[in-house]
Length: 228
Length: 254
Image (tube, rainbow over all chains, first blue to last red; front, side, top):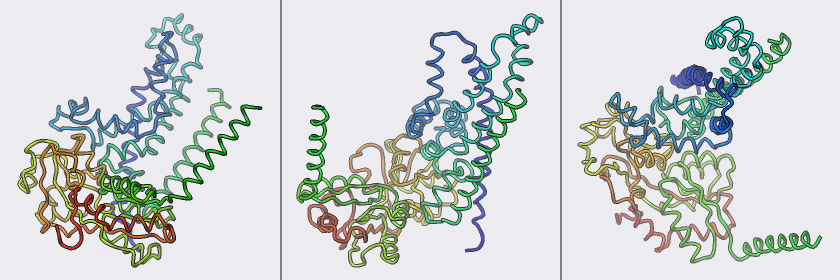
């Protein structure tokens, strides 16, 4: 019973990589979306918001099913993969990033949107009267004021990607070091009756989840106190 | 008031129908290894037509089903894809020892959706593919057989970086079916309704026979439908279905 399998930490590293890259992509892609959702007056704005929020409601199997078709040789993913001579984006780390970006998007966009909306028009109007260009006002006024929203979005996006399971199970192919993330590794250990290994990883996840939620609450409390 | 009364009456009638139905035809929960999915459905239908009993089927990899059974899953019969796990269930005291028998002998196939793509072991040796799908070898016997075959051909090390694993043989099939993997090792039974593509039935010399055992679980003792289902599974009608799906039958007739 002594000695852990040497590859038990590989899924941990892979998961952290996946979550970190997904979070960065989501901050880059999600910020303009959140800004638009917060500021636009377009009538179809809420329809777009609903579209982004859908992964909150849809079972991961729905997303996994469509991703499998989209990433495959007959979908746009296969076309993109063709650029470097591959046939499909499924079973690749890149494919998981694509899936995770869709899956975790509402968790990043929503807090940032709320933070932008909370600023209101006034500070931006003031910036404009001080002859700041809209772009400058965005970077020097809106983004700093929305910092708590960015922090919440980043933490939630990261944590939610770590907690992803169904989508990865369906498009991952369980490849060590490439698509075998933590949740899938745990499932694998349980399925093959390796409960000690499953326990180590699962208990780690419990501690992680607790730490994330606790720190989120503490951040929010601090923000409320300082009024930032 | 009137409507409420009517609703109550309907409800009672519905309950009576359900309970009454059970008095004549019993129900049994069967855990079925994923490779046997289609055959099991057909057998369950024939079983119902003949006996009136209902076999409720749950599918998964043998490893997954085994774990669930050790955790008190409400299954009364297990149709495994190997003989090891049913034996282990007997050893664990979770299954009835003398109920164990081989209901089918599985056959491994290398399969591709593309015509003329699979051309015997040469296709594996040439290695002109990006992804080869197999079932998870620790949980699914067909996955283990695939690894055994690759090792027998001395190709495992070469091919390993290209292997993608389905969680069970059904997912492996679906990886190939969607074209995400060019080819994969699946069960011959899965190709029963699938004339297209190209295939290579792996010679039995390359892997140990996949003896698929059925066993009555302790939870099924005394259940009339469970006993009837196992008896039916041994009978000529079920055997014909099993053979139709490309399995061998114990007794060396294949």
